[in-house]
Image (cartoon, rainbow, N blue to C red):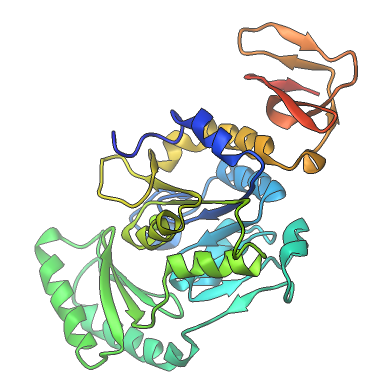
Length: 331
Ligand SMILES: [Mg+2]
């Protein structure tokens, strides 16, 4: 991972890159917020991760960008204050619950964009055909993601993988407007339109009012090939941070890496919260009156002056961040 250092070890550099900028968070779902599991219908995210995403979204516009059907990914995440881009970004909807970043949204409150609507009947037709063609292959699972399809083969005997791919290709021969790509133990079928997770990221930034903006820092975290489109957009813009979730070194357009979700949840997200707060415009730093800050060496600093302090140990004074403290807060 030398080329793509851990986002945790590069934390200080990331924090300084974010100073004075508005962070916008983009999060893939499977393998990023949830573990990869055998049954894709049971790819639940932990309550701890949900709490963290809720906290992040409190401070920044946050979008889930997934290959899944938008409704399905919403049912996993269950946070109404987020943006959701399902079907690899071909189905985008804004928060259904009030979000303070709506002030950046020049249009309607709920962004809604579906660039592949005309493909709906074709996708449904191909879904039926794929179900029929793959039913003789034990473990194969076809998922209808509304504007795209997935054929999961995680539970298929390895000897049957090439046969399954052949069956899928034979169905697609009659549909030249659909293309086939491969992800982590999944074949993805999508319309050939020029739209992907990278385009979705650009669309959302524009919708939020950050189209030609220098003081925005988009952060995209994802684990699969389809996320590379978003990493590439960030690299080409020379703006933002692409973070690849992977146990092993991979060719990637991301700048940083993180290990699997279960490994990084607590450490990463706690740091991310601090990182978030550091980069907030001073006026928006939430203030709490602390009684004490417990430092990591066990000592504590009593806040007798009533200096306003934000959660996670960021001490602010007259609107500026003046100190960072490792350790627990005692409010
Ligand atoms: Mg993923």
